[in-house]
Amino acid sequence: MAEKDIVRFSLRLNLKNEQHAKIYRVLSALDKNIHKSENQFIVKAIDFYIQSFEDDAIIDGLRREQKPGYLTSNDLEGMRREIESDLKDELIRLLGSALTGNQAARTQRNMEESIQKIETEESDSVAVEAANLWG
Image (cartoon, rainbow, N blue to C red; front, side):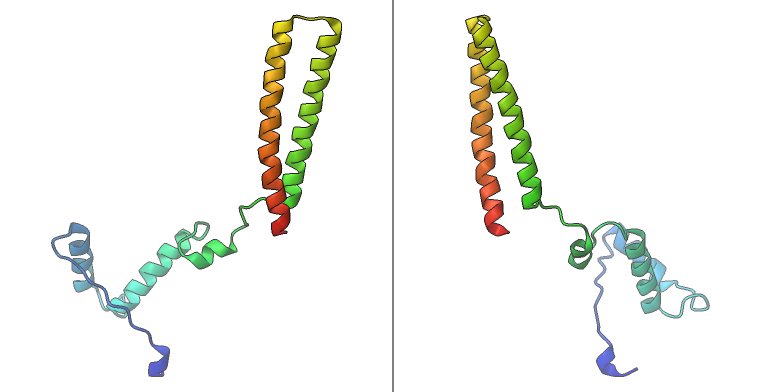
């Protein structure tokens, strides 16, 4: 194997740390009839660890392969339509309630809830517009 194909990493163990001391004892007493070298043992151990967490992101490269966790403009448009529909339903209930002469206090409470929904929709519409600008 050519020297240009070899990369080196150093491993520092602190023998005052119990976990490090355990690793040192294992590497020092490694059975060479079973394991080719300390290097090969470490490579196999790291490879086993990576394989056992294949579905989780261990490194940045694995994270990029996962499905993106962002909202698309279609998602935002669907949310906008749903909010708009809910708002229309609430306004129709309010108008119907006002026309039939139900209690004024109930109408006032419903109106305040509608105003809060409208304010929420306005802040959501800003997010939708921003997302549409991004494409």
